[in-house]
Amino acid sequence: MKPIVLILTLVLGSSVMGMSLDTSCMDADFLTSQPPEADKAAVTRGERDFSVNLMKSLFYGFNATGNNGNIFISPSSIYQTLMLSYFGAAGKTETELAKVLGLGDLDKDAVKRAYLFERAYQEIREKNPDLGYELTHVNKFYFDRELPLSSCMQLLLQNELEPVDFGNPEKTRKVNNSID
Image 1 (cartoon, rainbow, N blue to C red):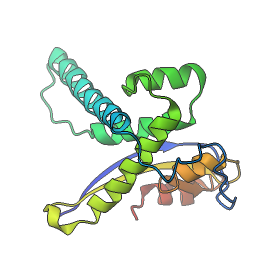
Image 2: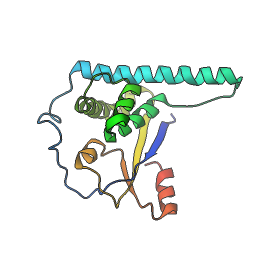
Image 3: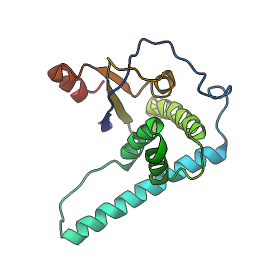
């Protein structure tokens, strides 16, 4: 069976990975309690609606131009990458991303909690050979290791962070194009 690998990357200019993680920016039970079902459902509904709207928009655009070629996209991967951007956004950008992602009135902490728990369940599903297929999400934030990144973002995005040396473009290109 061939693995299906979905890759969408977003370059972020930030971080040093050697810092100790400070969880003071999260509420006391952030990592110990499961998010409410309503919060998980809202994030899932946001991803589903985003995916459907993206597909409708793409097919409308293709039909309007008369293009009948093949296209391949991963709405899930695009959504997850925009979600990573949302976590680092503030102000108007945060508001606009929340709207596009269909997050409704959920506060950012509720979205973070739902995201972390979904990622944990995804890790379990990815390691389950009984599913009959292999699906691996490989969304990454490539960041310049010379710049600081908040410890909360490090904790939240630990599997999605990849330190690179933007001063060495050839080495960075090789890291960016490899799949581990």
